[in-house]
Length: 386
Image 1 (cartoon, rainbow, N blue to C red):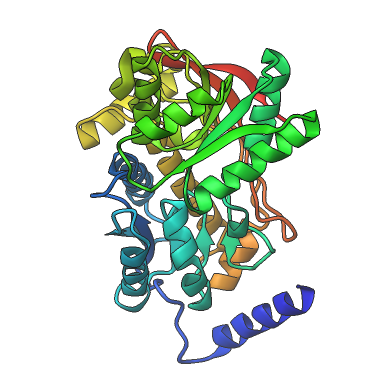
Image 2: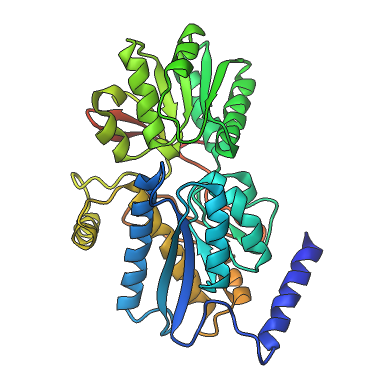
């Protein structure tokens, strides 16, 4: 890895010295950043606020004069949570938009399909909405992640739930792809440490809406805890099916289901749902003056209240802005990577974790907190779980 890194840095240095070389996406007046989102598919309810959060942060930076005089432009492509469309979107952003970096690509299937070609094209692959181990390991100069990995935080959350509640039979409902498999590894690791088996597991296909057979199978297995590797819509559908049958089993969802949209859509059916929070939801009730002002500014700009996905979009864009500022006026990939590897964020108005990157560690945070829906809103129950 050291030799690979040295060769990579040397190659970047040669490009910088070339009279004809120009850093992709960087001109005298502009920095172009690409992002692949779902704006029309099964998780569009997440993609739109992520995009809007990033837009707001870039607009804030531009209103303050940009980054060393350069304005930031966000080029967004809609992949509809479809890996095949995502590959085409990535190719367009590299070849036609000539973006400097990719920021916050949404969804593990999308990320797994596009990350190799993005990195091969020499573009930084930054903070994807896919806490998959491959987004930061093995160490690569162009891969950075800020979201705690599924394996890590679901191991800690499952272990905490089983230890505190004394469940004898824990089960798993998972999306049949890389996302679900990463969650499964965390759940199995937690139960193995506790000397308990995974009593039952059952999967569903991405975009599914009917969970009757899966819930029937889990109920027949006498599950006392069901871990959900689901997103918002699927979380609501699974819990609604269980409650319709009168089954009051405890359920724990990943951070992909931790959203106000879950209780807004699910209502009484999702009351009591446990979830993992990497960033708190920005409820206006009880917000600090600074957060309340941000919520109102977001509402005025986009005509709707922000949610946790809006906050995450704003946060990933803020980390990009910080690194680009620290990279200096002669922005190129080598300087940007070097700045990001020295970045240590400070507490912000949203109440999230601090993020720290080093040359040997491109994962900014490893932990999540346990939350529960109580009286129609998420309430944090723990500090960051280890």
